[in-house]
Image 1 (cartoon, rainbow, N blue to C red):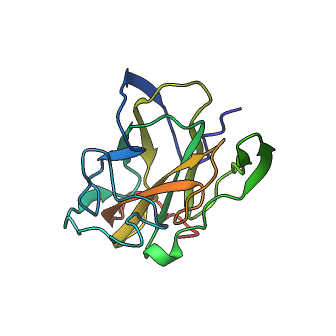
Image 2: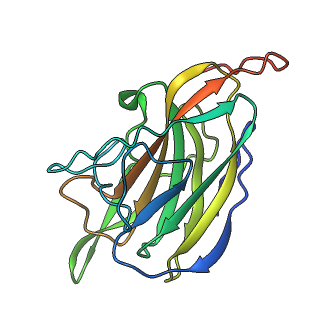
Length: 197
């Protein structure tokens, strides 16, 4: 079951087109906080991408958004992995949540990830969990709109991760790939302030 809605979050996902390439996912919108190549690399390290050898070159991109507003999130999945995506928001990268807990299974090719925790009722700092859950081969473009909490937060980090199943794991990044965007959020004075952030 795909659990992508919370009380304050609307997520409408749709597949737009099939794409095949040689990495995992590229963040299209909002603009990534690091420069990504055509494959979306570097993206292994939590919480916001990079690798052990390459932490990533900062892009300087900042997206202005008002609290309570819907924000478009779009990614291009470059290589298919069964699993799902999760979106979280925090004032600092080190306040972003840990990657989901993964249950392992034994296969002919060695240990592989079998399942990953999906929060049915996400709470801060998670906005949406179980997003774009899919188990059939084929990569593609995915997009959704999420409701931004009504807060003041200059330089907040919006994190998008891809959780991979049937995967042996990565030396850096375990079973997830990571991207972040920097948001300047201005609270809407006509709406109540969101709590828990």
